Amino acid sequence: MIRTFLDLSVKAGHAEQLAATFRRLGILDESVAQPGCASAELSVSADGRSVTVTATWDSPEAYAEWTSRGDRGDLAEHLNVHLERPLDATTVGRVHQVLLEGAVVMSDREVRRCE
Image 1 (tube, rainbow, N blue to C red):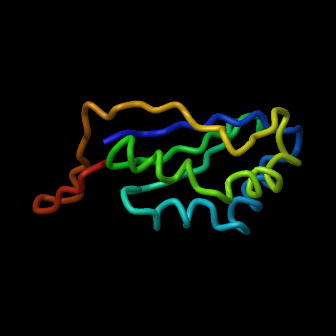
Image 2: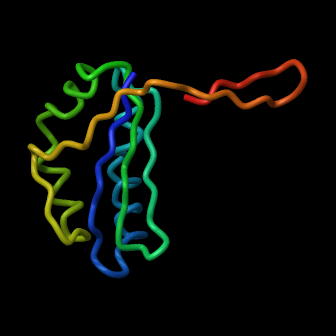
């Protein structure tokens, strides 16, 4: 399993607009619908100038399938109006291999895996 991190430098005051654009374009929903994607999240720093998109994938190959889609350049055009540094069709995130996972105990009988 891998986790990917795409760090975005956001123009001042644009973090919420960037998140709204991700939502409107269905980018996170499409990624988790992609075979091999378990989760995807968008988070923003406290100062609103940095956004990180993270996702958990079954394999580097599953992530490569996502990043080789033909519509990525078109999506970047919609996102770039909110960014200090523009994205293009070749932009990919950092890839980390997941070595350990934790678990959260919900009750005496139920354990939920954190992945």
